[in-house]
Structures are given as C-alpha cells and as structure tokens.
Length: 360
Image 1: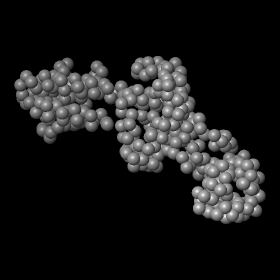
Image 2: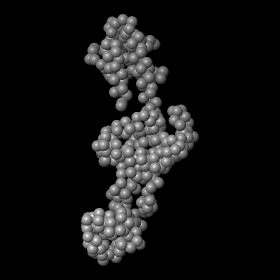
Image 3: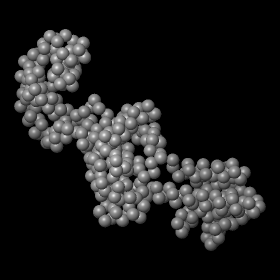
Image 4: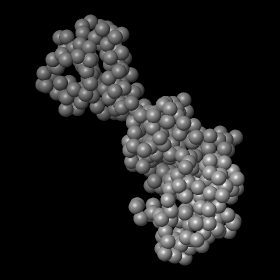
C-alpha cells in the first residue's frame, strides 16, 4: 500500500474517532490528502505559519500543525474545530503521521538497499555498513526466489505474494525491472534445498488459485552471508532462463537442479549449430510432425520402455516400432538404443537453446 493511501486511511480513522475534518498540505500548499472539501486558510496565513518557529497555530475555526520529516517540516496538517480538544487531538494525529512517514521511509530505504545489493552495486565493506545501519542481519542464511508471471507487472501476483509472506518481517519482496518479483527469504538453520523446492511449488500453486495466473518460480543456492546475495540473484535468473528453455514442462527451477541444461546454456551458439549440422546434416527437427514429437518425448520419459509408452499413448507397440524405424531412416538414429537416444535428446535440447538465443 502506498504511503498516500496509508495516510488517507489514518486521517479517515481520526475523523471517525474525533468527528473533526482533516487535511494534509504539501510544501506548495496543494492538498495531499483530505477528509473534506472545506475552504483552506488564506495563502498569506499558511506562509506566515510556515515561516514561524511555532509547531502549532490556531485560527478561528481551524488549527494548523507542522508535520516534520527528520528536522524539517514536510507537511501542514489542518484540523477543523474549536476548543482545547482540537489542539490535543491534532498533536496526537501529527505524532501518528510522523511515525508512519518514518516507518515507510525506513522500509523504502531497506528496499532500495536490497535492490542495489542484488545488483552488486556496493563494495563488501559498504554493504555491511549499510546493512548494519538499517538493522539488517548480515550473517544469516538466505535464498533468492524469482517469480515471473505470464503478464508483466501483475499487481494481483505481487499482492498475493505479499499476503503469503506477510507474517515474515525479515523477508524482502521487491522488483528491479519488469523481469519478475524477487523474494529474498531468510532461512532457518534446518531448512534445506527440499524446503526451497516446496516453497517454490507452493508459490506456483497459490498464484494459480489466488491470483488466477500461471507463473514460473526459480530459486538460488543458499547464500550463507549477505555478500553472496548478488550471486544468488544471478543464480535465480539463470535458473529461470535455463528452466524455460530446456524444461518447459515444469514451472519450478532450482539452480542446483539444472542438469545438462546448465552445460548447454554455457556453450556458444556457433558450437551448438555445428553439433546440429553434424547430427542431422540436411534434415531438421522442424520436419518432425507433432504426433511423432509427442511419441519421442513420452518414450524418453518412460526410460525407453516401449510397452509403457504404447500404454500411455494408447498406441499399438508395432505402431511405435514403425514410427521409430521411420525416424531412423530419416536421421540415422535408432532411439531405441541408449547411445542414439542420448544423442537425439541432446540434439532436441540444443535446438531449443538455439531457437531461444536467436529470438532473444
């Protein structure tokens, strides 16, 4: 919730309690928030109050209060009413407003610090000093989660995630650009990578049911210290990108579970293209029809088991054999053998990587 909305609710609550109307003015005397449409004091009166050393001044039917941010006046609070109670209630309202402004500024400072930390904008000494000043623990275990939805700047997704972690005051939920929502989660000493996998899966499920949106969630290795968080953020981003390229059937990607996709991702595209030319020569994977591709993927998922593949696809075993023999004639690879199956699987992943690289 934005600070303007927070302060608006604050003044509306004060109006319900006291029966008075309130208005908060900016430095240029424009209305920031208000509970009414009453006429403001004259500009000369407001200027006189701002230039005086007084923190409070009474007019005929309105009291004026300076609202400080640090040692400087930031706003002027107007309270319409008469009597001694107006001065006391106005001062109480000012105290609450200043507390809310301070808390929001501290939260904003922490958020900015965490963003810059993830982007590796601080030296190690500077990071530790800033964290200490903001009362952020430096030597605790943390992990970085990256959530990407199908729609950019999905406010429902962000609200859902904030609600999920609302009780966890030491976690950070932020965003650096349109690439997704970042969660920096503080971990207990007993939490493991299995727990990170469970958290990521829970986020996907909750976003699907609560925010009605599909999402991918990646997570980093565990960072033992605050200085490792920028590296953890890079790991989460890599995991998300590698996962979307090579493991499209999944929605959760852990940096520690990227498998062979991690190796292919490190290769230059030119080397990958040479490999594809060597394997397929004049042919391409695009020439394979969708039905055959589904058959191949199901066959690989079932560890090259013909019987289980035919059962899952409701296809006769001889039909599968015919399809694989046709594939062998086309590419020279018999995927019923382990070595050729491995080559074909690698080729499929490499082709996905080449397509992704060229489109990005």
